[in-house]
Length: 194
Image 1 (cartoon, rainbow, N blue to C red):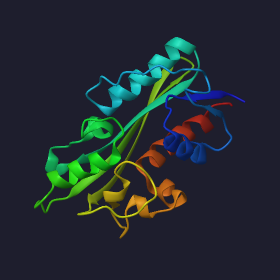
Image 2 (spheres, one colour):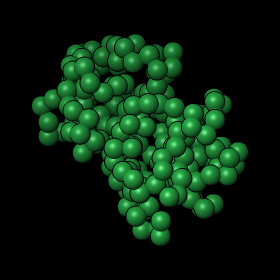
Image 3 (cartoon, rainbow, N blue to C red):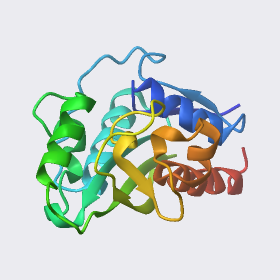
């Protein structure tokens, strides 16, 4: 079975992707390959950051791998938090502070349209491929739901009356930005002679 490294140590992301990809490839995390480096995300776009991660792992470990970058883009905030989604309030991964900063920034604003976006950069046998997923929605006025992570408690996808954080993982995986991008990745992997 072919091995494929997902350039992340985010357990939530790994779980979501494993559930989508199934057993076509052996999915490895950074911990599994013994990589504890803090890979810099210095790009100004999701494409650049995803590519930085996949190239870092491929160049250092010579393994097929993919990196992703995801974020929330809010129209009324000029596309913010964007590539700074994980550290929008300053501290990396402080979901509560990030959500509060978004809600404070949208106080009194009626246009609450937003989208979650994921870009995957796959390095497969030395060639780079990009896969993208987007889900449109709106930002709620307060947090709702206890599942998921990040901005899930304030993001309501179009066509639904609940937030990502109120969905089961299976429900979220069927419509999320990451699920869409991973499905494109999966289709690519299926087209390869594995």
